Image (cartoon, rainbow, N blue to C red; front, side):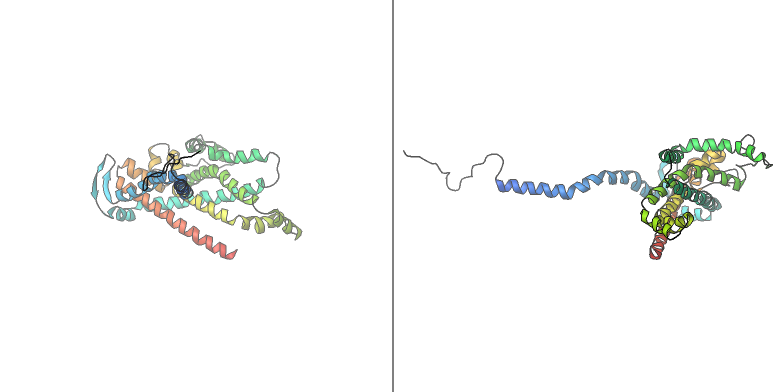
Length: 329
């Protein structure tokens, strides 16, 4: 029985099953694999960079452009080029230096007690206590409270005639303090609001760092006869040194951007100007006053860039301190 076979004409196309040859499929699979391995990480992080570019990078660049112009809030489309005149005027403005000094003093009054209290609170929470979860949640509650609600409550507490703080002071013979109109009293009251809101947050940061310290270090220190206080100074503090530096920088940034607490503490028009004599006006309030009260957006953008440059200085100082501490370790 004869079996006939047919062969394609010489030079004709090879038969195809619709899916391509095996070599083509392997090349396509390898290409998709390379795209997946190399492109997937960029696809995952792309949303962050898109949001950052839209809401952080672009406003930063646009603010720097506005700071070089004279532009009013009502006519943002009309800009007059003035170069660095806004920066020169800001350098010569006494209100800027007053706001910078107030920002610094309020930052010190709020940051130093806040971090010391947070360190002590974290040290207590680090022990095995009953209901430790409750205390940790309670420490974080002020941070979760709205800045508006917290500032409003403390403003009532520091009220001159009917506030609870003055009532308590009167029990020990102290006359009523005008917390708003006295410079140091006002700054102390505002610092109290900041301390109340952020101490628990920093305490939990310290607590997380403390729990990462190996327990054998404490056991070795106890065997050597170190007391609890000596263990705290010689083991705990060096073990969380980097976290302490981080919280200092974080608190400094927060103090530089302080806005809501002094604004609400002023209870009206004086909140924008930081009191009748600008006794507690911060850089954030000065920015708001220039832009939304005086309608000078160019000057407001200049204040914003001054704050940004100040934060860069803080970052540089933080890096220097970090390297110095790393060399000593």
